[in-house]
Length: 250
Image (cartoon, rainbow, N blue to C red; front, side):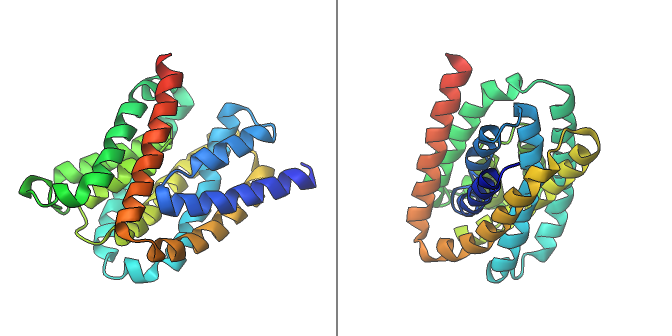
């Protein structure tokens, strides 16, 4: 691998780490970067998942104020995150991604709209956070499966589900999402390490950049008003849904 490729992957990792914290769309930065340096789609997908674990480490260290008091909830959800990541990774190795490609645009567009409207929706009792219940945990497990298998904008879906569990400000929910994404990605990474075509030399610069970006991202998120952050997540998510929908349906 050339010095230029190493530098490009590190920069993509830094940008991707920040994007992951702010709008939960990290793979839209890092996955194309891996393709650009010559990896095949499957190798790029699994290499990306392995690298993403470092985003959670950086973001977790930088988000300690937002994570205070969330430990009991996160420990329980970590089980669902690990199980979902394991399931998604197994599906990726044995099935084509076409099924998720067809449903992903609808899921992402719907989740993006909910993120933007969440403050208004929570004024109605039916949309208020309900904590850890079988239904909410199952929904979070489903987002972890999606992330481990297909991944595009999975963080946006996770944000919506976590907001139905955690009654805290948006930055706190984002911090929880980052940590749990690390659990699901880490579990999937273990599967790929043994059974997937991981390009380990590409993991190092990308993961290093993602760690740095994860450290930087929470500081930026704290300075953005919640309304602006919701709008940014929603607009980016809808844009991704439109692009994915175009490729899936036309």
